[in-house]
Image (cartoon, rainbow, N blue to C red; front, side, top):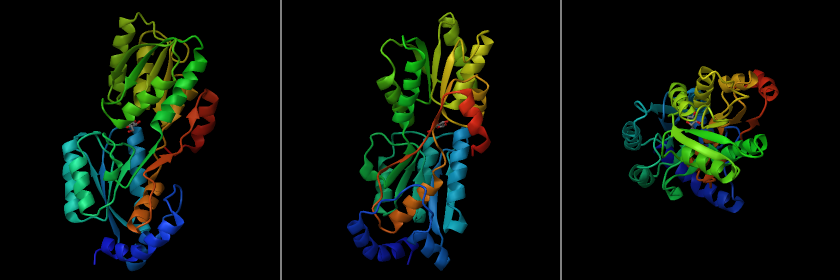
Length: 334
Ligand code: AHR
């Protein structure tokens, strides 16, 4: 009997209990719920297919390492890590399909694209394999197609950035947005939170993708500065690497980041906090990547037949000054 079938046999009772108690998976717990305990006890490991993005920048490295550390053999898991080939969704769909054919117990998905997942998600559903979305959502967001989505709140995080900008420029100012790749759920949500919050007296001069890249952001922003005779006072960069690229462009133009141009970034990696401490960035909003334990709790709860929250928000903090960044740096884990 497969490990999943075994859990389904146990889950008959657990499900009744869960329904009565309305148990939902919660973040930050230990990984000692029935599945991993049974797995650890019986020696059978719970097999989990991780359809991942792969190398993309500091945030992604921290997130994927944390997932691999959390779904360890010591915690009762055999994690099969499948990073995308050069960010290509087809390679992810191939890996996802192979995991279904292999009959893994659960699948984790960090999608390189937001659309195009319906058919494989339906196949996983037919095979009764729980799918947990990590970080990236899917469009259209049909939440019947997956067990749970775990991520920090992109809309709230970008709204907090806009709130800070409103306080910095009470009469508004000219700004530029450096976006991630078009169409991603995180990009759409970061635009949504920012646009809904930024003051009406602000002027968006440009919004352009720099594909999460420092080099591309430097080149894109250099062009924008030239086209606007350096008359840009604010940059909303949707990740740290692009914000650091914008800072390089500002310095190349003979301007001072932090005073001539204030740069906001999202992620909260060490390099961004070091830049904030040095005054090269002005506001850093964490997009907390360390939610591996939460993902373990969700997978264990799903395999034990418990009810699981559809949308699990990972707490994140913001940093708005060199002093805040300096104070946080010694304890940063990524
Ligand atoms: O989906 C999260 C985004 O992807 C991060 O903000 C960015 O750094 C990563 O590449």
